[in-house]
Length: 146
Length: 146
Length: 82
Length: 82
Image (cartoon, rainbow over all chains, first blue to last red; front, side, top):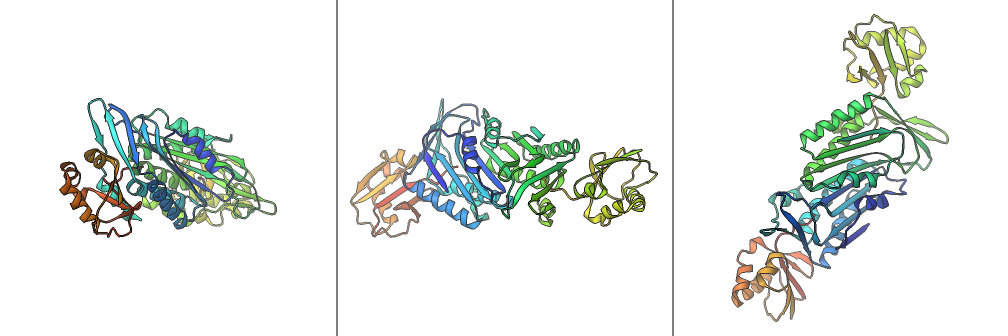
């Protein structure tokens, strides 16, 4: 289980390879990469605030839960904070399991929980406005699936 | 949409990065990597047979279906054939979409369909036996989800 | 003349990956009957067609499908890709 | 003395990321009332507590939770990570 909360850029492909390599007991690796999306074409940057200490504790608890529930061989979570440019990765999750159903479900679960239970807040900075991203009811509802 | 059927090794991380880079309209990238798993600890290699021509046509049809149905920005499928050693990637799928639900569902759908509708057959070669991998009822049942 | 292909254990039982077959069979099922009657290795491969799949000109099809106009028939077990 | 932290727009409205507060409040709700009565910027931040979340010693909690033994309280809007 590897959890990193950092301001530095990360290389999703290199992280995926390091995570997946040398495992003979694993048949399925799923990754999710969240990318800064420029919906309106005017985004200058995305500022990500977090709650140091609580962030790591919350991510660890959620990830440990996923590993136990889906009997994962391993799980990875990387989440950035600070000012991010459009098109760069915000965060990634990876899961490794014997079979594909467990790897998919666990990654999906991790994303749902990280989205609404890990203490991060996003603010979009454009030329003429700065807006805190609002949580969606759909994101809270998604937790009821699990 | 990128589809490759090949005997050569591929680098899942490099493929993921090439697939994800430079997209400002995409917020979510999901990847699945299928790895040769050595369940009993005696696997020498996995031989993958395929039906040239039909393979590419079937994968293209399934992928096009996923792109349309989930309004994907892009999709990637790479599948190897030939003799593969334990621990190496057999195939990968990647999906890029505005939001995570579409990216996850489309990747999950692609895997279910590729597993049961793309003409590949796996044979496990161990020291004392060579066994064609049998299709599972669960894999056929999984198609009913979509 | 029709190109008939075999994959995986069907190929191993019949002993060749493909062959040209001169047939008047109207359906896949008739072609299977014809081959089964021919030699033991075909009978062994086609003993349980419920365990087999068939593709006509590279599209998955059914055993009661007509063969008129078809150039390539392929027999194989359920796929196990991914 | 209690360490009280604010994040995202709660932080912006109150104007500081954290502060030490000397309080006898028995619950989170009482602390919110106390702060709201203090100054307009707190009243603005806590106008609608249904739009807020609270963590006690870095664990998500509820507004009716007791503050006995708690060293750190954090107020923030619903999280938007991922």
